[in-house]
Length: 328
Image (tube, rainbow, N blue to C red; front, side, top):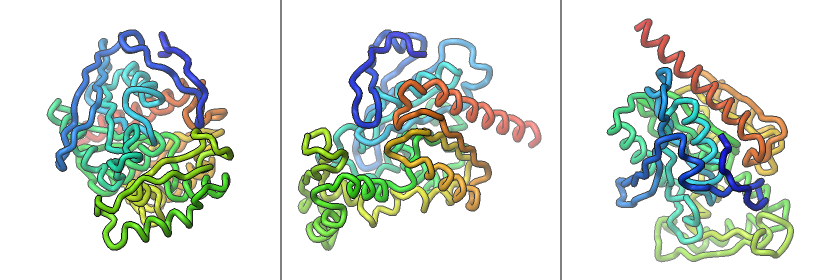
């Protein structure tokens, strides 16, 4: 892994890599797909599959969900997809309505993302995958955790998370307080409540707002965040309970893997053990926690140990499924 990658700029959260389409993905099968949701939206995705022998790993399909202001085709989701496929698994890397700039323009409503994952799983089932694993990075970790706790589909046999925040609202509040955002978290909450009352689902009341110094200490555009009232309310507001993994992970009913970054500037290192402890005390039958030393939020230069940890967990999960089938 890692051939033909162009090193891109260093941005907030770590260094980005520029995809080199047609070269960095030549060691696998790649098929673009479109996911059609029950509420009449369409999102892009890509199915990556191994070219050679898989040792039985082809039986397990992985659905991979991106992080905030991210997408399926670049950044860490692309790195994870390639690493998992090179180990012999098939990956559907998908967009959701939160992808790219959905939160800027009003479409990125986090509480509706289960419909997007529904569409992804339906596609994998049509391709004859009978055992599926959800993997999410950062905000995607929140999405897949919420999804399994909410839907509990019988064919989803595991949830893997990377750089998993315990609470998106709490993370936002902490960051805005650190940098002295304008508006403050409390002011944004009051503003959105006033503008969206009595029905947060009412699109006619939605407007864009800018939070200066929300992601950094300066007034540069890089340190600002752009939201609409509704996208902020349903993913970062205090009532966005579906965005709080410490309220959801204890309701997950399949094995969970948490792979956290040791030097994460966005997710405190304490949040991995917090989530693992809640999962262990809840309905989760098996919890794996691993922290990658020296890794920033996007695992710059630490992609190999991250992928190794995820693949090792997938292998253990597959072995347990084989043992259960053999003893049935």
